Image (cartoon, rainbow, N blue to C red; front, top):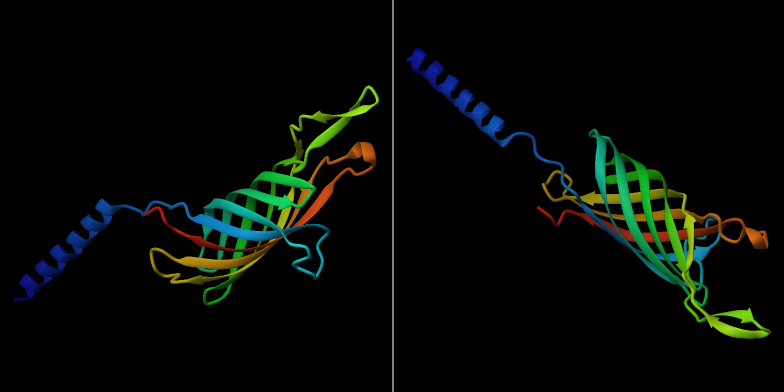
Amino acid sequence: MKKSIILCLLLSHCSVAVQAQAQGPRPRRWPLVVSVFSEAWALPSTQLVKNPIHPGLSVGTSYPLRETTQSTLSLNGTLGYFYHKNIQNNLHLLATLGYQHRVVGGLYAGTALGLGYSHSIYPIQVYQLEGGEYQKATDWGKPALAPSFELNLGYTFLRHSPNPVTVFTRYQLLVEWPYAPENTFPALPHTLFHVGAKFYPFN
């Protein structure tokens, strides 16, 4: 009887081990990170949202480089756009290295440092002086480097499930450099206040 019980336990253990090996480690998935934000020409301050509101949209994803129960180090990529009335349409592509630390439960705080490309185009017709008269000019936009710095605060729901959902706020400093060095305006700082969500639609 004892031999039969031991034999059954061994067979059961082998079966579980074989199934685990067949499944293998779960592949890392790519989340979708979406946010809407308000942009302003400004340096960081305690006023998170400045009037008037200049709307923007950001879409991105992230790849975890190191994960523990308390923290995550990730490489993130985002594509963003904002409209600053009568001044510029801006499209920027950023790569950031981000760190998040779980405070308690699903609450986390984080920061990120990045670099990317910014391209600004005037939203109104541009003119240039030719032969003493102003003529319509083609605006190809202004390319620039875009260093950035972020502070993040978020909460993850269903964090033990296969499909957690995170809602977050992000306060971001984005700098266009060079901007107009010929006018003693070498860099243009933007502050962006985001509200967004991170989820996994591509299972």
